[in-house]
Image (cartoon, helix red, strand yellow):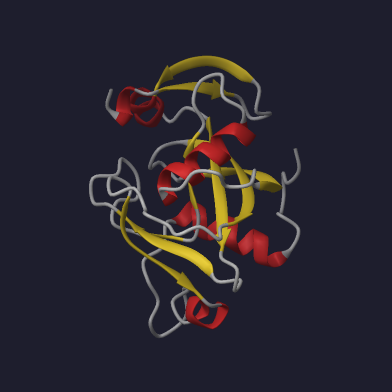
Length: 180
């Protein structure tokens, strides 16, 4: 099954399930769905950063501060966070990611809106990122990361939803709509 055929829960502005549809249809029609973002840190506190592959449905070839993805139909946010983190990092046996906050992201017409549930996990295992998802990766220090964020001379092209999640996380509150 291709990623565009994966069935997702369609939700409303209050994150209540109102139906189901294939991912390709959800994106094409701009339907609200659910995603998870997992910030991964290693034992030294460095953040896992990666560049998405060029064949991703949304935001191809852009850099991301989180691993994650869509929540499948009938799947909980918590289960999706663990599944996505282990799949993208190429590991098994991660601790369950800890929930931080949730917000409704509007892609500005790219693929609709999605409820974004943000988590964090520590990964002390050697990573072998999923080649279908990750074109490049590294664990970056806080200083290395700041040198690549918007406004810096060496800024990278970041996925906008992950950048918004990062900015909310750094602000400490999660912003409007935060919470469960």
